[in-house]
Length: 257
Ligand SMILES: Cc1cc2nc3c(=O)[nH]c(=O)nc-3n(C[C@H](O)[C@H](O)[C@H](O)COP(=O)(O)O)c2cc1C
Ligand code: SF4
Ligand code: SF4
Image (cartoon, rainbow, N blue to C red; front, side, top):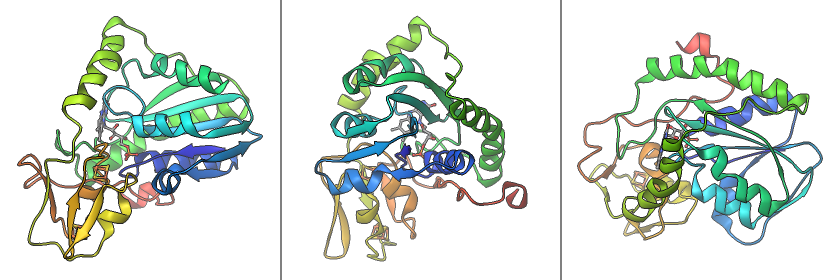
């Protein structure tokens, strides 16, 4: 079973591609995280977990979900982590999760996809995004072939700097940087409620038709990037910047470019 979490669609895209290649079942963890409560999943085929990299580790919101979920059946686990450039030491950082769940780690592979961290960086335009996604396809396919044969994924790079980025820097990032405090809404808001629906942490409610952010936020960028009116800003950093959402998994890349 392929289980994924995605804020802006990149990991969803990769998960769907793999599911189509492997003919395997697909589970979106987003609604399960949003609804809360205990989750039990069963898979006879290897577990394939697909999620974004946040500060050189698999997104904490997904790691927390996997820690609490009951995973029955296969004990083989593959991880495909989508990132803008680099997953650092994310592979090693996933060992405790695998140990806790009794899973055998069959490999952790990064898949470079378009950058989505609007609160920090500019995101690529449509043409650039399509080229990046196109370049990712052979790696996704190769991973799928290895998974089908129950072979490990290629070993990732391991360096001291990677361990620092995925360790203390990651912890500092969540402690000091990840907060909904900077989000605000502009006059363009049309009160559609899409932001409240998109937030897997139920961190947004509409008050008099306008979003108000709470304290639980994982900076997934779903609310700001999916707002149909472009009415959400994060501090002054996002003003005038384009928003990013991934193309649909079934979209024909050749036709789009
Ligand atoms: C909070 C946050 C932190 C991120 N940290 C990293 C990172 O450490 N390295 C990296 O290459 N990309 C990083 N990115 C970029 C995303 O990993 C990348 O765009 C990913 O494919 C987004 O996946 P999604 O569309 O499924 O949410 C970060 C994005 C966000 C929102
Ligand atoms: S998604 Fe955008 S337009 Fe819709 S309620 Fe939220 S801020 Fe307003
Ligand atoms: S408030 Fe926005 S950025 Fe924060 S977790 Fe919810 S959808 Fe993601």
